[in-house]
Length: 366
Image (cartoon, rainbow, N blue to C red):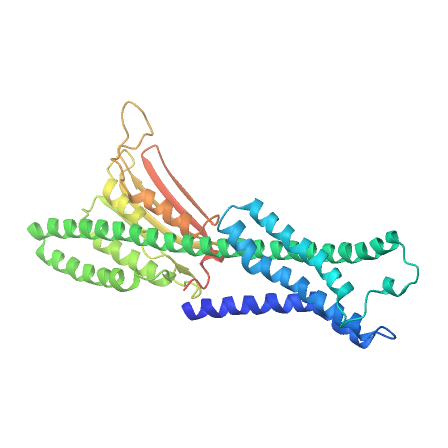
């Protein structure tokens, strides 16, 4: 990871240097081949000024902007530093060219009877042209550096959000797994006293379920076929503790698309709650579990009978679900944002919970 970051920084630095060359040096290089009768000294002067433009750009990009604006809020020092650099280069360089004997003087020095006003206008042309170019170089460095920093901050935020999401999902799974194991062991414990053979079969089924939870539930997603098989085995395990008066149905698709993957144990809480809270009423006692893929959606619908309060018809007499449904909602929000619906409610002695997830969000989620 450190090597990748180092290579990325080197690549970014090389890109900035190449950009400054293309912006400031390339025109001067082209002028060498198209100078016509222009003295070599003027071409050399153009190259030297391009060097100063590049220097202003690089000093701003690598030093002033990160040091005075990004890491420290020192805008006044930033603008003052740029002002001093640009004024020094714009004012002193033309004077050096005026007085230095190694290079030909500016064109206006070749005129005869040069007045003070003409001399100052020739001098100002250098100052204004070079000053504008240096201000543009500083502004470009400012814009590019801030854009790079914003992109870096956005990338860090995405990485932190991904880490937080992974930690939260692991926490949710850690809460679900003991909850499932606790309920299963209670069911087997209840069977031992009056049906030891059924308890032995239940323990065998539990070992198969635990194998799924230990090895497969640690993965981000599992094939939908495995999740459906797990729910079917869990239902058969729970069937052992029910008496003949309870009507239990579990409907699952026979042919499941191989490219669909879901978060492990996503539907378990709904099924657990049905077994935990069902109760007889005037319609009988029943639990109905249905998993299907229709109209581009994967849905799991669990309904169960409950005892209706006499004082308020339609109000399910259930104890609090604890962290169960809340964890499911948080998982769905983290894994499938904007691609799921969850509905729960009770009416006339029937409580239903439905989870629907768009199939497009489940494809190839290995």
